[in-house]
Image (cartoon, rainbow, N blue to C red; front, side, top):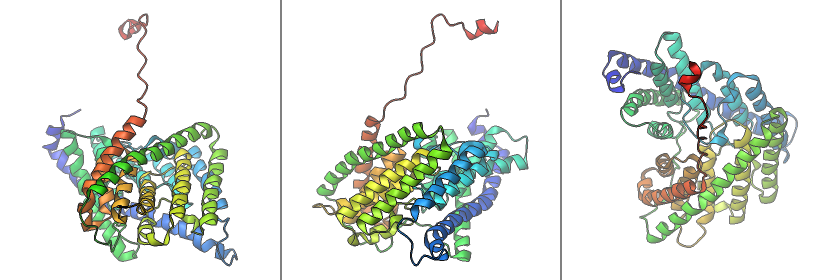
Length: 442
């Protein structure tokens, strides 16, 4: 493998930068189209289709058949197409490296079925995989003899472009990918420059397409946030509490997801629709208990997060706790067998828990939401820097005021999560009487 510093100074690296900028245009446009397709499918299935079938209003039981179909279509994509629809989200969020182009259709259809039909996962992981696969495809079409390192760098640039505006800023997406990949040293700059360039171009494409379609720029910032003031000692104490409690909920979600997956993966065409039925049942039960829309339990929470915070005064503590419980279970079941990302459901759960906690003494709404999001994202993603940025990005210019207590919540959550997570089993020691490789080859 060439020295990264030598490659950084070479003419071929300049060519890589040009390729990264060029592929950022179609990949970000395709990512924008995928997000639009998911949104249209959700609206059609949950809002428009009941009326088209003659119902005066959406029946309370409506999520049940839709989520069964969600499970069936997802299972078909996982089992019938190459690549198993991407990695299982129950394993946590991680950078997958270069994706084989042959796996792209399976990833696309598994994610479309999962997200469009209401399972509780987000689009960030499929977009990262799709961007990587399309980047590799672009390299192979342009130069079949391109070295593997070039394909890896362009694949990373494709991932950067695909999520360039999904998290509200191309910088947040860059931090997400770099922190998940654990890159450092010369390799960091080698991957970062093409990635940032592709992300910048992708953001411009998102803005341009928004001006043409009016779909939206997908900013996570919550408008009209009231002034939050400066942190106090009480806020600091609550930050520690958030950091201690969030890992308990997050680890419970993950452990249940892994346990369910172990029992469900043998017959996915049967178990995944059954899990979809359970997810739909949680949504229906929540709606009947609280008189809130059942769809609050479904989907990633990406578009529902802002309205949840804006309408916090309309939610009782009981309804918020029911939402956290139902959404957590639905999230866990979705992680076990469906295909999508963990970021937005974690943010939504953290915000809902923060709103509920804001009814306690000395804890204003906005800092509670920010600390809840930071602590919950840290537990589910194990990416403390990205989690801090996500929590403060929501508050716009006021984010800097709450960042100190968010950092405390994130650090405590990260340490507690590490203590609750078992260490991987050590590799078995070689047997003393085992023949050596040299002896066996001779």
